Image 1 (cartoon, rainbow, N blue to C red):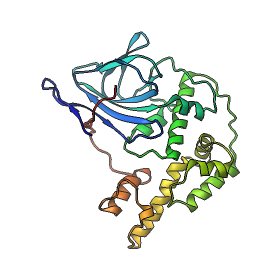
Image 2 (tube, helix red, strand yellow):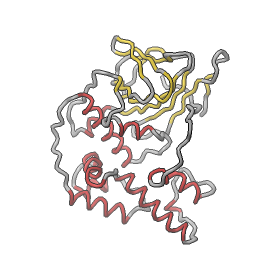
Image 3 (cartoon, rainbow, N blue to C red):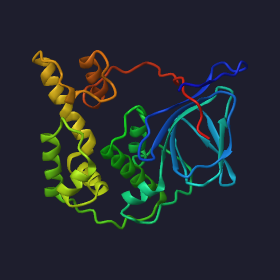
Image 4 (spheres, rainbow, N blue to C red):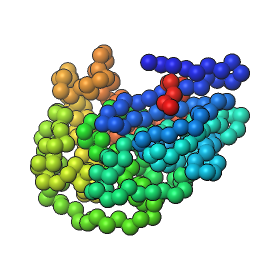
Length: 284
């Protein structure tokens, strides 16, 4: 459902667009010109990146300012509001994730606390910016684990708390996972299957797989599917149903598959300017 918040006095419409949600994870893209959000709170973490303008919000007794490229971290059950810091309005993308997923990705450790809710775009926050670059990706079991690990590791780093987990990678286990994903790229592999193969939990698999191969299990499987689809297209074959993205292919399957997956592998020309996009009805 698309709802645009029209304000005749504003130069453009205020709006919010939500991405697919699953496993308690939600994402949104927001643009506000003159109005703001009343004080409210969530039972999830809210982690976002300002994409345009100046964002201001009250949080833990202080007024905060978040500029384009900066990250903001909202802890569960913390009251906050939000609004434009200038007459030009502001935009941001945000991810909401349940604290139990973060705790699971930390192996049961206590939840980290980030004292400063506004963070610079350092290497620690880049994985979050990458997740928010496209909020339209569906969330599978494997991508859920990837999101939880990225958020947990980011929060732990920003909190300044030492990581007490063992950092040794079980190369044999993640190699078995990689071999299985390559052999079953046409399938939606449940995270529980990989847990059985590696004899460890899905969060450890995700973290160790990235350390070993530079990408996540879900992304690796996507690239294997892309390779199979590309080979089929180049040989003049029609794509079989098991190579088509479940939610995307109503018509033009070849173009849509390449459009959907090629951003992971093939470069695109830079755009000279990216405008904030119209969005959907607000979460409160």
